[in-house]
Length: 195
Picture: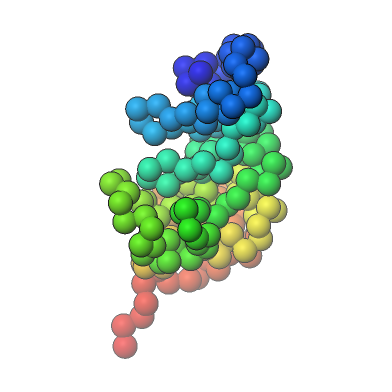
């Protein structure tokens, strides 16, 4: 299933799912590989929208997150896979990262969540908007903003970086223009001022 999803073979995924009974299908489409990725995560990372649709039809969790807190939304935005990103958001997947007990919108709360202390990998503190901005994926930026207008003001971590800072660091001038057009503060300082 994972291989078919990563390679964009939607027909094979559908055939595999139709061969299984209900509860087994749900387990198969949400099963993780040795890297902790589900088939829908791999399909979203490669921009295989039809695979994501088929997996969703058979019960794939579009809000799944890996051990380093990446979601299908995150990898679709990072890759600039616009149609895939739109489909996932249209299914009401959440931009919020969730631990078993909380929904955390503030990155400082997220990084300090006691429920997640057992996670072994480092959380990179980047949001889907940040990785879309870093990659210069302007249409993905627009889609994320349309889904949640407040996303434009998110900060990555205690440094106070915003998507504008990330785009600037990567030389993504078109992303900076779009972010500014959507209301991002291009004059915001990263670090608190020292008096």
